[in-house]
Length: 154
Length: 154
Image 1: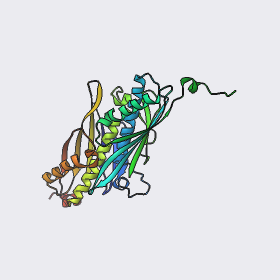
Image 2 (image 1 turned 180 degrees about the vertical axis):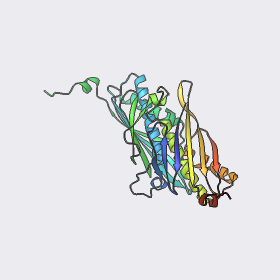
Image 3 (image 1 turned 60 degrees about the vertical axis):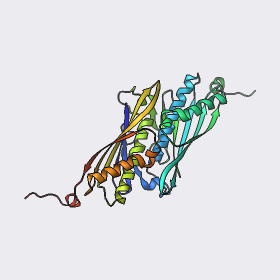
Image 4 (image 1 turned 90 degrees about the vertical axis):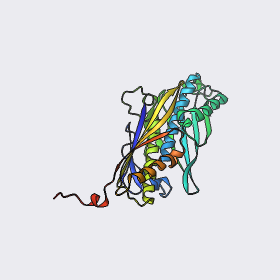
């Protein structure tokens, strides 16, 4: 099974991207957005797309692993921030900072952290990547009762 | 400098993605699209986004390297096809098949292939990835005169 994207170069510093699913259709990407020349980049970049690949993979795998461990996440939100640096004249990806915020009723923080760190290094996109990832977590652990029944203070 | 994306999980098998630039805003991704359960996937997947990251990086870097070598590409189009396999119960990225079609006036095929293969392994996304890439090429080498002056057969 495979999934594909096509990049077409149109100018000296920019092109457009289209993916199989249609999530991107003629979406602009540019070297000015990529290397920080624009104050407010409006075009996507390879690093942003790598962040999207990692964030979606981590989130999907975490939901799956929590379910396998008997937990039903109500919400998972993951930001993946890809850091680009210039070393010896070449741009390279220095690392990926991941922050995951989750609402998982009844799970112990220690169990959540164990699962999340295993996913950080073990999900399919993670195993395909060389750069280091760092993970921070915000866990909300309401019980199922808390989630379903509003509190009515006496 | 960094570039970020946020994935939000909304259901048992699906979520949405948003990137810094706005190229993706609440774009659906799903495990059914990812693992081939849907006949015609309409949601994006981590592998498709990795393909988009690679295709855009390869294309941008190739344009830059061709310019550095004194060539002005008229058109570059690159497809990156990310292959996913299941091994020992785990999904993994088996490789990336890249096909580049380019119109570069006056370049020798050998020089183009040398530059393209260097970019295949040396562009920033490539150096961040573990899976093997394979590259095929379709090169059109019209001269500058051919490109600018239509042929008028006598």
